[in-house]
Length: 403
Image (cartoon, rainbow, N blue to C red; front, side, top):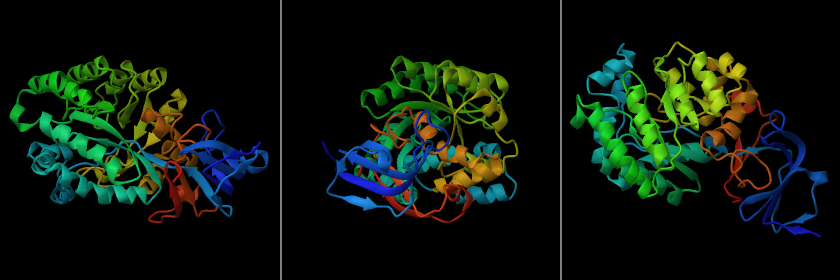
C-alpha cells in the first residue's frame, strides 16, 4: 500500500532534533514527507514506507533542520531608542537611562501614540528579517502599553502578524514590564490593575497565550511578581519570567515554583535557582544579544545549568532598547562565542528547547512524525556553519506547515 502525501523532500541530510534522540538526530540520507501540513515520515530514505506525492523535491544533499524558533522577542513597539544608544556609548547605565525618563517608558509613549495598524506595519520588517533566516515560530510580548487599552492593542497587533505572514505567533502578556507614569510611587496599585483587570481581560479576549513579568531592582519585586504569576495561574495561563538579569532576586526559584515554561536572561542565577528550575522543568532562555548590547560582564552560569540538567534555549530578545537584533543566526554565534555554548547546544536552543520554552514541545522544533512540517533547508556542508558564520545567510528554502 502506498501512502499519498502532499509533498516529499528526499536526498537530504537531516538534523531532526527529535525528542529523546541523541545529539542533533542526524540522518545522512534522509526523507521528509508531509500531509496536511504535518510530518508523516522523517528518517532514512531507504527505510521509508511506500510514499508518493504530486511534488517530490530532491534536496541534493542539503541539510534540513526544523524551522527556527525565536522564543523571546518584544517585536511590537513604537519608535526607536537610537538616542539612548548614544547615551550608553557616552557612559550612561541602563538604570540611569531609565531613571531619566528613558528606557521602557520612552518606548511606552511612542507605542501608546501608535495605532494598531502602525504597530503591525513597523514590526513587519523586523519579522521579515527573521523569516528570511528560517524562523517559522516567534514569541511576541506586549509590555510597552502599560495600561489596559494599549496592552491589548499590542497583543492584537501581535496576533495580526499571523494574518500578514506565514508564521506561528505565541503571544505573551508582559504588562508587568515597568511602572507607568500615572502610577509613579504606587507600584502596588499598578500590580492591582495588572492582576485584577489586564490579565483577566487578555485571557477573556484570547489574546495572551502566556504571561511574563520583569522581576528586577529596576522592575518589580519578587512579592509583586508573585502576585502577577498567581493571577495568571489562577486563569490557567502558563507563565515565564525575566529573571536575574542585573541582580539575583530569587526570581528563577519563584518562576520554578509556578512551573514556569522558562526563566530568561539569568546572568546572576545561583545554584538554588538552577536546582529549582531543573526540578520544575523550566527552560533557561539565554539572550546573548542583550548581554552584548548593554556590555554586561557577568556570563550566565552555563556549567551550572549543564550540571543541573536545565534545558537551554536561546533567542534574540528583539527590542528597541537593549537588543535591536533580528538575526537568530547571529544569536547562535554570540551564544557560542560569548557564553561558550557548543554547536549542538546552540542548534537545539533555537529548535527543540525553544519549542519547550513556549510549551509547544512535540508540535514544533523537531522533524518527527506528528509535528508541524516547519523546515529550514540550508546550503551548508555541516550544521556547524550555521553557528560559525557571521553576517551570512545560507537559507535555501523555508517551509511553514508544509508550504
